[in-house]
Image (cartoon, rainbow, N blue to C red; front, side, top):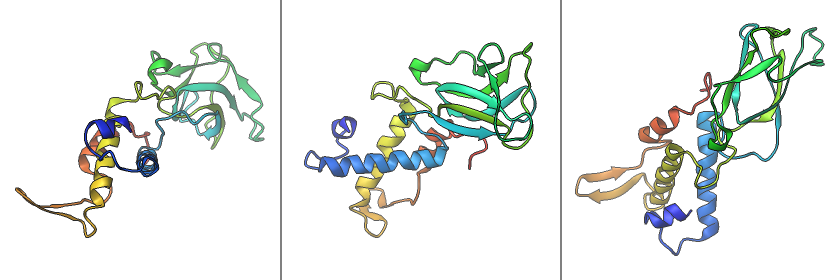
Length: 197
């Protein structure tokens, strides 16, 4: 909010509640576009995955993996609990939770006793599924922050363009493009979940 005021994107007399609703709407639009979120959801979630092979399973971006269990007997009880370092490790290896970099893959430890079942929905993961659990204004990813400012600007300008045209300028009439602008998509594409459309 401070950045929108500082950059002169919105006038000082804009209602704070209106501004918050625009920022929230843009943030949720980004969540839908990328398949992930850039804020701390506040609690762990339980999700289920299908492993490609016995050595690894791709998951949604997670800043914390609390537990991993597998359904080895197709009972849907997920009675085989995996222990970090003993049975699995997370990848990328050098992520740093304080920087908000997520885990994408859970890998079997090379000499571990377990393998991931490749049956449908055979892996259960509990964790904090988000891109940046430490998302304070200072820690927010620069690309995402810039994209949010650009999209908020568009929404505020749209109030002056009821028919999709802002009006004449030195370069001619300026039209409002529906959906996300190509430049905003370029900023967000690096954060899209693999396989998410």
